[in-house]
Image 1: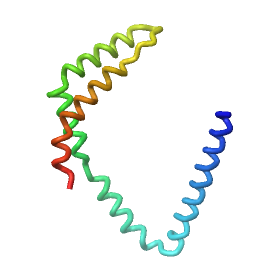
Image 2: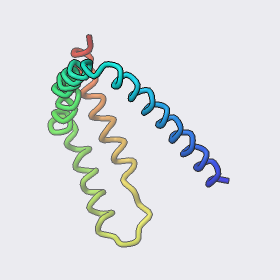
Image 3: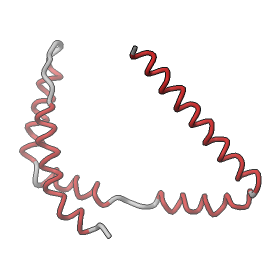
Image 4: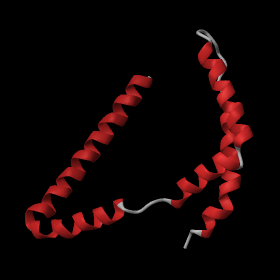
Length: 112
């Protein structure tokens, strides 16, 4: 059953991808001069930096150090055991919740 669903999904994505490739090839054949502006736009987009990343990193290093310490401690404990069912899921959630809560106000200052 699961295999059949997976196969149908992969066929669907393959056919969609093939259609996209056909659509992309057609405009290129008609007007190759249009490629240069598109490449420039892509280069401009690559230069953009998400301020949320830096803000979250700062919060993790300054505000959420206790949660990070608990997470690191849990990771070391799990890695030291060869057979364990323990995960650090709760610690990860606590850490990310702290980071998101700390960074939220600052991130929304950058939203236009």
